Length: 479
Image 1 (cartoon, rainbow, N blue to C red):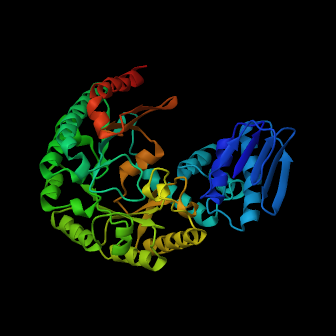
Image 2: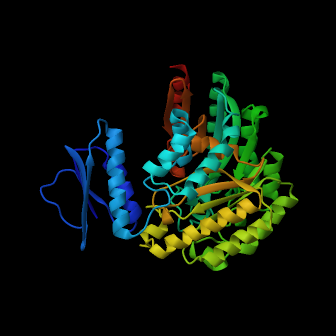
Image 3: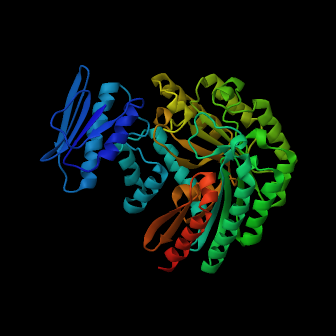
């Protein structure tokens, strides 16, 4: 698909909007051109805003008056393009013209600026968000409020990255290394990670920052053995003032990495929340997506975690996985509900550019989008009936059905870290390869990032540079 841009600077938004309707096609953007070649989307802001579409036998154009500012012109252009593409395809998008990651944060911001009622009308009338998704955003925003109010000016959260997994899932694009390939790196990585954690704790203490939450992600942190886990977790507990910490989460995401030694190492180091993530309990789908465990291993791991004393467990599911069906997804969700987990996070499959699915040429079929929407409709109805509440939500580009990821929990078990990181509430200090420190100031409101090297071997080879970059934390707070 060719996207032509004349006399405006908001091609990025129009490109993302176009991709909702053409998820399997490359969108080529032209800013300098002498001719227009079909199939095309032509966008122009001159005396008026003009959007035209020609795809096969379909050829239509829409025009509206130009506004005095770029924000309104961008909105008007997106509305015209959306109308044309809905007309061409015969489908509407559940989130309308919204393509951003944080719709709940946007709703909150607009509510603060213009009042709740006008903000919701803007979602419906200007952004074309469906009633179903508006209600979801409204409810999620309400449930987030009490969590956001816990954060203070001096609050921060700690993220620790463990970039190793038993294998790469076909939908994954995170920077990680399989345990077989990276085994020789792990001991060195753990040693350096402990050094970075200690140094980061010194900076936080000198600045008078207060630790709210800790989150170990990856990769799969429990690919480390019990001794390695104990080493890293002990450093966190001994380096930071853990007395102020409200939540300590470790992703024990792959059931095939969970045993009693690892679980006791977590428990003894004050970890009070874990995730055990099957993604599906259909063995054939697990095999299709490249996971090396069975559904029974998930159920066994969950039971073992309960036996070891964990009373706050999250489980992840993904709607729209290859070869999965509505019936199979329903069985997965129903089976997990039978375990009474405190949290259930339901993701929608995202076709990330670097994932095996995408590089192997798997495409998003229209019927899969409808099926994924049906899966999420069932999720919403059954989880609400079982007293789960939506407490955080985010979206990604290239999601099947243009849907969303939602964290559901029983009341009182909402993950604070998930809300803080998605809302960008306060500073996140990140350690480990691929970690991104996000520094937040409130007056004036600003956000800066410090990036660690992505790959484990880069992290090891350039560790001195990572430590040097950490000086940016002090500089940010003292400027």
